Amino acid sequence: MARDEELKERWNLVVDKLSKQFAEGDVLDLDAIIYLIGIQELGQLERKFKKDDKLDLMHIAICKLLVPYGYYEFDFVDEEGWPHYIIKEQLPTLKAGEQSVLMKEAIVNYFLETEYIN
Image 1 (spheres, rainbow, N blue to C red):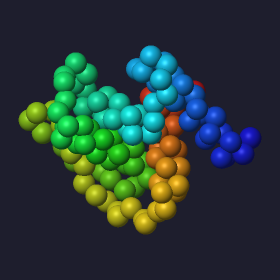
Image 2: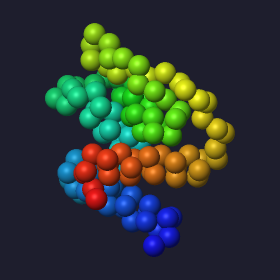
Image 3: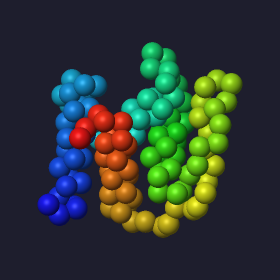
């Protein structure tokens, strides 16, 4: 199977599975999935988040997702339990479609690694 086809198939599996689990079947978009990963990485699942927290959660997720690509490195967890990352390498300038593909690939790899999908 071609790499693009495999990514598309796995991405659809992630979207389908998460949508059924967290959105009562409504289709989650890329940002919603990034947000869910941020909550997972923070580990404070029962907490209610403010708008600013939501952006921070998405930042945590993006950092975590891009660690394997060498762009970020985990640094420490602060006294409130929030993980912090340092930039290892600046992200290259990517077109919107390229950004989307990179994030989808990183998300698929994250869920393969956590064995949420196989």
